[in-house]
Image (cartoon, rainbow, N blue to C red; front, side, top):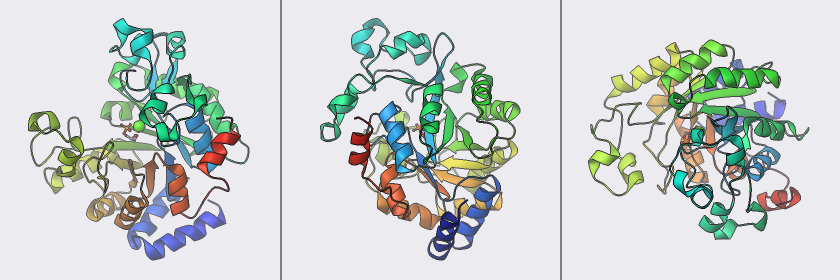
Length: 355
Ligand code: G3P
Ligand code: CA
């Protein structure tokens, strides 16, 4: 960590979280992870189509610590970066391959995935942020995101890689280890962080990459922490997903502790809990960053990187509660909040990058 970041850490200690923050910074430094960490969720995905070249280029040039990505695999065995299990939301698959619009990513060859337009949906969904150059953007391979991360000598983010839907991709942990090894990305601790909701995948990642820091993602619901309500969103019959999750909490303290212990025993250095956004909406889930939870994680030697916050009010609440880093769609805003602003605005950077 450079001296500027260290001094800023001291400032945070004075203003946010007290001893809890000091413990978080100590844990982060032990594994060479920046504190507090700026994790660009699917790239700078507020300003550009998620998981595409401009999203990752912008996040890199803003100065994010990590480019976050969701890893899947094409039918011909290439590691690709896509969040959803199907392609309908973020591409023109319904027009290009109508009979396979609901097929999983794993049903498409790399050439088919590369033939999709992964940018125009963004222009339609967010006309106020639309850019003509976003039309026709391609889905990226892992290697292409590595190329972005290596592409600016003055800005060298790490990669924060999630094995998404890992059960659909037997052997993806070994495939990932092989690509990272081939690209020389396993030499420096903390350059890569591995993340997953899937405990089995976490164990496999630890087997093939024991030296790489790993984070167990947590939420309240199926496959993760049991809810006090005993209900899933589907069972609740409610319409508003974010409002439903905002009311969810772990069944009890023991259930939360059980998951902390699972993470620790599986070799994780941290957890990635969900959070409730002040304005709810998409990507707002159960509040798993209550101060007692973060203290418990730190006591067990686990870092806390919360997903996914975009507003300064939520950045402040999370830091006060004692988290050690934030997944954000708005890296520029989080860097400004941490007083690490880029010299140029997001708009200037995108224009300079040719978008
Ligand atoms: O990986 C952290 C966060 O991204 C988990 O949620 O659904 O956006 O991958 P999701
Ligand atoms: Ca993710």
